[in-house]
Length: 139
Image (cartoon, rainbow, N blue to C red; front, side, top):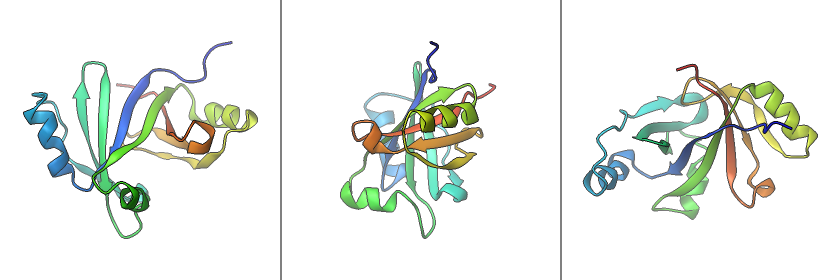
């Protein structure tokens, strides 16, 4: 049987400040390819991507009054790994597959930071790790 998930796209790290969080990536690792921060109001986050040869690191900070990462940052005030994101060919097929296998899908597909549809899977089903599934971007 073919794997339902594809390649690891990115690791999401919740941070209190993107501006402060990019400093060690630039200063220590010498990474220059870091996107400008953008907002995703529907998901309550501001984000940027640290581009690496093998994938990306998504730095996310709270945006707006009801950001879902506020509580996460209360538990991890300096920031911490928030999620891992895997690509899937078809988000609706992936959602149906996950539900059939008993994984708890958090909400309906919505547009994520890459401009493609995403869903999240409850951390209790994956050894405490929040999993994001995103449709493979066309670019």
